[in-house]
Image (cartoon, rainbow, N blue to C red; front, side, top):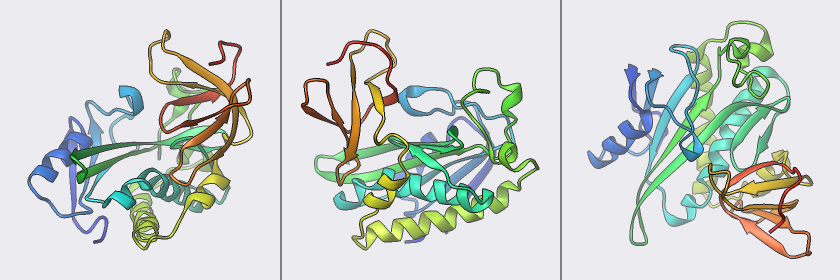
Length: 252
């Protein structure tokens, strides 16, 4: 299997995630990519809208049919591939905010969304959505100006999306081959996490009334779960959720 051996590129689409899920039903090949210049309903985690003007960024989804072992590491391999692409392009070290926000100089440059279809214990398909800011001008996006960046903003010049896409596909294939061969990327991934060693707040949804957990992000387990030490000394392992730097709040 080779990621990107078949690529469907369209100028405009509702959602590359939705398109990949339809292609899975049609039994399109493993590793098929759907990419677009603009998607009407691009989304991130917790159904947040992904800001991406037409033609500025990479918006793509990858169709995979992983086995159960590979499934556990999809987030790790994908975020490592995106991070490596950014680091190679910019010549600087980046980081990952758990679980999969890729950051350069502490600002978000890419996000990843994974959706999996199961039939009992069988993995039918997984779709990995990747949004990578290539030429986005964050200065004209007041909602994200303070928290986001792009390759263009960091490099100070226009960046070819096609070149970045080729680099990204190469990195995706490299890191996916690692987990397919049973090699662990957990330590490499952990070394890139900006979250470890920080006092964090973990929330479980967008509703402000949802419970939060505050504690010290100590480490991750082999599957990428974040291990948090609470105020009472007990440990909690988070496999999902939204992490931010801790603020005063109720400690669960």
